[in-house]
Amino acid sequence: MDAESARRIEQRAYARVGFLGNPSDAYFGKTISFSLANFYATVVLEPSPTIRFLPHAVHDPCEFGSLQQMADRIRGEGYYGGVRLLMAACKVFFDVFKHAVDGKGNSLHDRGFTLSYDTNIPRQTGLSGSSAIVWAALKCLLEYFDIPTKQAQVDGLPSLILRVEEELGITAGLQDRVVQVYGGLVYMDFDKTSMESQKKGIYTAMDPELLPPLYLIYCKNPSDSGKVHSDVRKKWLLGDKRIRELMADVAQVAEKGRASLLDRDYVSLATLMDRNFDLRRQIFGDDVLGDINIKMVETARSVGAACKFTGSGGAVVAFCPKGRLQAKDLMEACESAGFSVEVCKIGPASVKHT
Image (cartoon, rainbow, N blue to C red; front, top):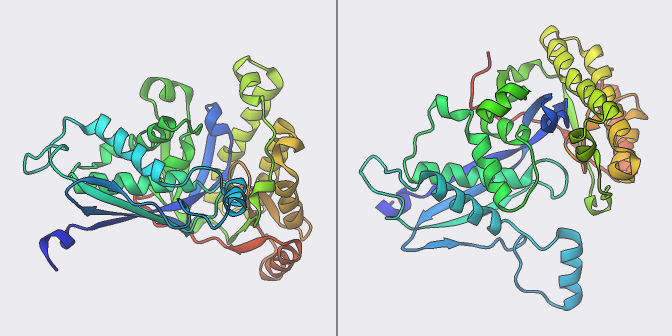
């Protein structure tokens, strides 16, 4: 292997599941999330004379057989692929580290590279596919330019990912980025004082072995999920008493869920999962949630499984408190309804649990 090929860098970032407490993370609440090893994004950096971005054959198509084919693709996938995420990651990386030098005294101006990516994270399923690409790209850049990521800096990395997405006008919170940086299972307290003074919450890595067997259910046609605009954020900012109380209840679900996990009280855990979804439904309403998303939850509940959204829609996470026979019923019910279902595999932790 020659010197150039030896410097090829490949990094992976996993999808994530918002397990309990979401969406209170955007409202100074609390959440529990875990990284999902079933799906991931990979970014490859190779040294080159200039800076280049390679479009993905599937996600960044620039050639179509007909106008019909192009229109169908845009209706289903939108106008944007992953190259814009790579470019934004590089731009923000430069803004933050432009005065940094590597161990040999070289600046960020001195080396070119080519970035490419691949992903198997289903689109529009609320599994944080975009931030996975961004995080994998940032890890490549941090390694290539020898920028150390000491433990003291780890808590700041989710904000770096979020800054990249804000560069593109993507509205998001820190929950997804925290668990993708930490990996494994993470309890997050987005305490208002901490968020306003330090721009980060209080994050506690937990033992993934505390989780019971969980099942991911996702939609094969997420473009049909809820798209109605929500005014919840506006109401919350205006101090709407009902919205604020309900969102505080959602945060409590995560707090109680942490205690249930530590006690391995899975009966209580199932109740909390269902309550999380019911509170979300009260807050946002069925038009915002979308018929298909609600149907996924109802399909799981039809066999007695606990179920809630993994994110904003397109996928749900289910728990079968009665065990394997109930899980078999869940699989059959999902197949009959036309949904994909698989056992959740927890992604590796990069920060040790306490």
